[in-house]
Length: 163
Length: 163
Image (tube, rainbow over all chains, first blue to last red; front, top):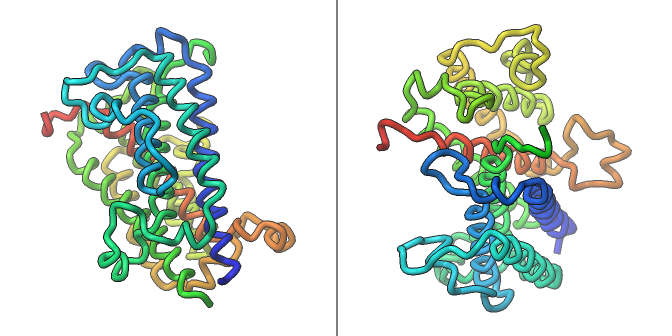
């Protein structure tokens, strides 16, 4: 194994953790009212976005074989809303975000470098042989971009405590 | 050199190119009026964001030693606005975005895997010896997150052509 393998895991993990930290900072600055107000008319509320990110964390748990989802029942409210499940209250979604971060971050810390370069659970062994970039580390890189996407939306909120 | 080194480069490049493509698609869907309207009152317009991303592309050219900036004069309008330089018109910023993408993408294609793992120009040789993750590939990974951050903002626009 080349030393660069470990380097790349470090690069992706640093980026993931830094983005989580920025989101935590932003969440902590939002009032109850801001959390529950759509960012733009007809768009999602910050609380929904936070719950959505937590549900995506649960998907990461599955894709990376870290363990069972914490709240599988929220997928229908927070990833593919079909009207059958109501999104929980803001406080519950924030708790879910923090719990799911702690859960997957702890599990990820014990993955070996080889684990990171193994296939994620949504790609078959056959496809992975042809496309070895579809590994677990690639999932984390992609989900970091997903965090950044939503962080870009959260920072648009005209923040009373920052004003 | 380990075969995984080339794999990392491919993973980061795929992510970069896919995010650029999503931004291009969004830009193409925006009307002149939408381009010039702040996303939220007091916030940036899509046109400004696009110019900002192009200026960041120019910084990438420097950090990755790809060549000179295309428009060094825009930094004071689009990265650190100090009131001395006015942002150009929307059409000019869109052209700048496309030109700068073509420019840096072409130059990046000729970087070797070893080039990608060498230090970027904002880190000293001394610091790099201690922190080898501060390489050129890390810059591209970080700038992909930056694209995602702003793409998250652009997609909030209630789009007439999509409605």
